[in-house]
Amino acid sequence: SPSQTHNAGLSSVIRKKLMGYVGFANLPNQVHRKSVRKGFQFTAMVVGESGLGKSTLINTLFNTPLYPAKEPLPPSAERPKTVAIESISADIEENGVRLRLTVVDTPGFGDFVNNDDSWKPIVENIESRFDSYLEQENRVNRQKIVDNRVHACLYFIQPTGHSLKPIDIEFMRRLHNKVNLIPIIAKADTLTDEEVAEFKARILADIAHHNIHIFQAPTYENEDEESIAEAEEIAGKIPFAVVGSDKVVETPDGRHVRGRSYPWGVVEVDNEDHCDFVKLRQMLIRTYMEELREHTNAVLYENWRTEKLLSMGVAQDSSVFKEVNPAAKMQEERIMHEAKLAKMEAEMKMVFQQKVQEKEAKLKQSEEELYARHKDMKDALEKQRGDLEDKKRRIESGRPLTPEKPSSQTGRKKGFLRQ
Ligand code: GTP
Image (cartoon, rainbow, N blue to C red; front, top):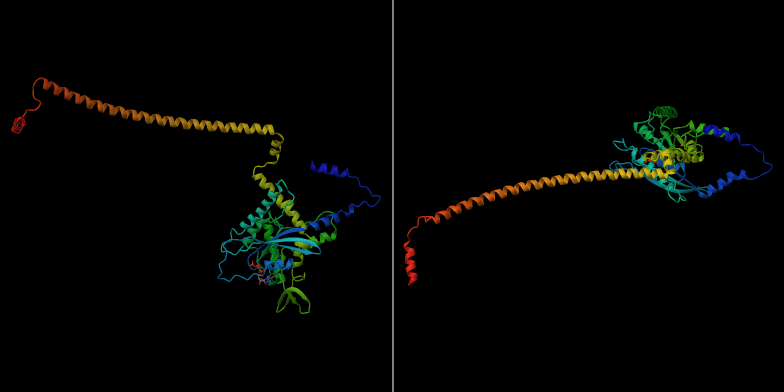
């Protein structure tokens, strides 16, 4: 079995102590230098009803006015009827590390009277990004693969304090095996701490009930306690209750912080006692960005790819057999081709016979018509001949055909002509 081979392989590895410095301890630094040179690519998608603070949160997360402030549409304005997909890219840099960040926005989601199919354009968009990646992988030259796959999807839940809405469940059910889902309770400053705690519990129960997989920070064996604790702390905050703000406000004790100011005080974005923004940023950027990219590639994309190829009829085992046996494949193709030819021939023969039969029937009919006409003509002629013969006999016997009337006019004319 594979595990036995694996174990056998492991047991044959002999641990050796080095006699001096060799240098492969520098490998992580090599990887580091190379990736810094190449830069990073990350695509995040934001989904949620209009006005839940999506643009604000993205600007807050990346600390950059990536999203231009949008004026809310007046109620009378013509609103689009479908969910649109828009993306913005920006190159941002921090301590010499470049990140090409793409944010995919989905304006219109959940904003209609009927939101039954709101998830559809989003699934299609995610799949078309997978398609484009697959197409690039299949090219002869794979030097410059552009990875436009969505690495994380921030799903904004309205801070109702009740439980998930049908549209939330439908969306997550449709998307959870195609994208790393990160649920977020939007505008958490509109709920009290107790309300947030209860709301979270209900959301998690709904998610479990519907077997929805949301992205979980992975923990590995042999990992240090600190990393495990960090992963657990992050996991404990899901769904992240966040507050976004791109404004700096002054706290009563004179500090300048990113936050939202209320008559009763200031809600600080970066304060872990106030909201889960810091933990969300850790999940998305500081600790698990690479995990999100890897999970997208190795699990989500890989599953989609397998399913797609299988649905196209590429079966792993039989295709291998066919490829190693081209003669058998050719033979099979020839038999199929011959069967197709024979079928075509039989069909042509049938059509031909049918046409001949039709022609024959037509000919027979016109022959009958001709014969009837011929007989009529013959009868008419026969009658004519009878009449003529009758006439002839009467002339020969000296009988006038019709009694002749003496005409004075004729006589006079004759006399006149003789003069
Ligand atoms: P669309 O642009 O319509 O898709 O909305 P959006 O989801 O991008 O929301 P946007 O970021 O434009 O914010 C909408 C309004 O909510 C703005 O007035 C923000 O100032 C406000 N807002 C954003 N985040 C928060 C938050 O965390 N708490 C509160 N109370 N208000 C917020």
